[in-house]
Length: 312
Ligand code: GDP
Image (cartoon, rainbow, N blue to C red; front, side, top):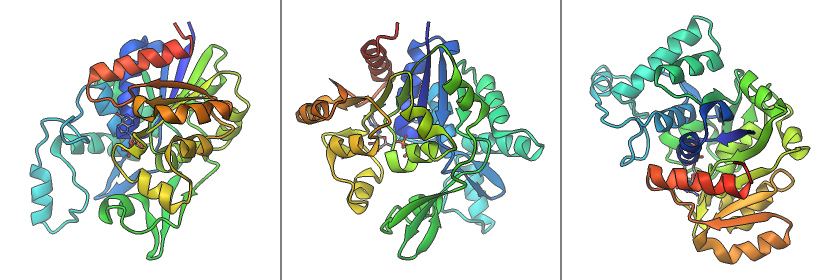
């Protein structure tokens, strides 16, 4: 029985990660999560993408709001505001507990991998969820108003400044032990790139030392699920970035971005007309419903992907 390695960003990736976790036994799944968006805020270490994946796998995610924890309250945030502290980044009370638990353990000397393993175990998650690296690799957005930390651009500026370039400070950092271990597993059956933002969520993972080479010289299929539905992002700045980066449009742009790294692209039914061109470029293409509204959609898509990969 082969092992599956999934690469994920935040909300979009977390949906498929949760689907894979629902259909695969935990010992057969490793989920590696982008940490390029991580930042320090009010003395706390916040890992937005890890949290999105953890909340989704633990069934704690707020499906209506689309991010954070369900049944959240905002008392601490209101008090922080009264105390005159920065309020540009919303922190719910339950979410804040996660950041506190993580931050003090990190400060006590645990690695992010160890802390993440501890927190996922505590929340009853069986699959391995690990950061892409225990070293810092930070996504920076270069704009006309200067270089911005990712969260300042994404949340503080609501992605408004044109992204002239995206840089990764700390590129070449080593993959985490779980990531390096999964890539080297003799029983690795496939690598799945979740439907995450290629520029902001997947490129940081690819910027780690040796990862691009490991994917390019793969001995297993590498499949990506397109984050586009009907030619557009479900949510977030992907459409804006595709335009600003001059990277083309539609699934041809996604395939072009991952050229040489993937051999299989899963696209949505609405984008069926893209399939012919993608296949002509040499890719395997699976066309199905990739919009995941509910946990049932997540598990269905995960099952279809494993079937397409001939992974029992
Ligand atoms: P973030 O780090 O929280 O922005 O999350 P990701 O990078 O993991 O995901 C953002 C991408 O997910 C966006 O480009 C969306 O288009 C895509 N996305 C969100 N939900 C879905 C879905 O249900 N299906 C597909 N195919 N893509 C999705």
